[in-house]
Image (cartoon, rainbow, N blue to C red; front, side):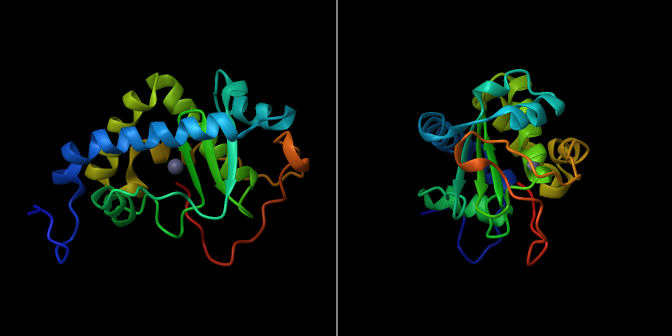
Length: 185
Ligand SMILES: [Zn+2]
């Protein structure tokens, strides 16, 4: 028996205490994978990260993926999708010092947005310290109005630059026009 029948809208606020430990564990595991297999930042990338306040940008690892990973756990996946955190329109995800970017969306704007999340994790001290506050904000205010999202929006760099930000394969493309308005995680 589950308190969340599938025909009812998902209520993150009531699901929150149950989902939180699983969400933290999932985030920590994904983050660890990217720390091991991801790409460190090169000069320009380090500069962008520093410009949005990151204290230790050399710890950042990037992973370029076709789509953002979804939790295998059904309730957790549903929470992520129905709150819009990891929906099909999402093109970036930051988990501690690990940043996932969907291929073709590596714009300066998205990077500065995600690096601002790195700053927020850094200030909180860990994934386990940051995620509860962030998810609580999403549960209370909804994704676009969460204070941590508004803070990031203020730090997005919208200028388009041709620049090398990652060490591997020559860096990032210019900010291209998305086929549809993409949302930033
Ligand atoms: Zn965000």
